Every structure is written in structure tokens, then in C-alpha cells.
Length: 229
Image (cartoon, rainbow, N blue to C red; front, side, top):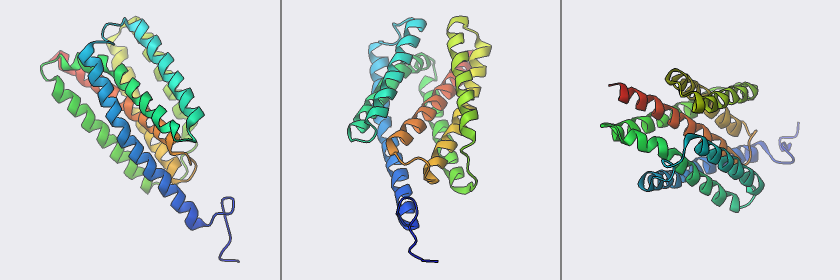
């Protein structure tokens, strides 16, 4: 056979591999950069009390409307440089929405320590899934539909708990969030490494949302534990 056979629409295996590495590298850089507006948004929300002043119902509507609006805009701009700025604006918004929980935990005597613990735990989850995605050889694409169903169930349960206000349901939702979105991180990273996701903005958005949800769930669990002490 011809050693110079071209694959993936005329690209050589070496070029395909280089493309995957570039997408993965850009995804990691953009993920790291996205933490800056997230922290700024959370700080602004805590400092001004913007989200704390909202009722749970209004806060949920604002969050859902803003999140889906930003995700639609990111999808429309993902093939241009504007997509990076839209994504960073989205992460600022997500930080702002997170500030209600952050402010509540900061009100505890060991609040700052709990936030750092949740951050460290999220970092450990990401590093673990990044390492695992490099070791696993099998295709994990089939996980996607089951994880999507799991995420929908978690979302419905979370919305229901806004009105029910059950501590037991809150713990259950938080634990499920950690499990589902940890698996989502592995799934999304593996898609990039397998060349199934070729847009780094889309890849960053998916992994960022999973990290956000893992951090939020861990912080909620730690916050509930801190109140019980």
C-alpha cells in the first residue's frame, strides 16, 4: 500500500494527530482562561449581593434564560474569534450566578476553607479524568446519550427542589451531579483525544459546564456539612 495514503479528507495520520493535539491544547488554555471571569463574576456577586437579593424562583428563571441564551450565542460564533469572547462572557455570568452559593458558604465560620476544598476536589476530578482519558483506548461515545439523560434527570430534580426545599433531595441531587458530570468530563475529553470533537470552543464549553456543576455540587455538600457541625 502507498505509505503516503491520505486519511480524514486528505490529511495524513500525522496531520490528524497534530490537529487533535492542537484542539486539546487550545481547550486546556481556554479552560484555564475561563476561570478568571468566573472568579470575577462570583466576587462581584458576593460583593454587591446582586443574586442574593433574588428569590429562588426568579434566580432560577434568570439562570436558565441567561445560560441557554449564551449557549445559543456560543454555538453561532464558535467558528470565529468572537466565540472566545462570548464564551468568556458566559463564564462571567456563570460566576455571577454561583455567587449566591459562594456567599452563603462564606457566611460559615470555615467558609473560605470549604470553598478551597471544593476547588481542590474539582481540580482533582479534572486531573483524574484527564489522565483516565489518556489511558482508556475504547470509544466512549455511547456514554453520551446516557449521561445526557442523567443530566436531564438531575436538572428536573434540581428545579423541583427549588420549590420543595428538601435537604435530603438536595444531597441526592448534589451527589448525582458529581457522578454524572465527572463522567461527562471523561467523555468530552475522550472525544477531543479521539478526534470526534474538532472545535475547541465547543469542547471548552462542555468541559467547563461539567467542572462548574462538579464544583457547585461539592460546595453545596460541604456547605451543608459545615452547617451541621
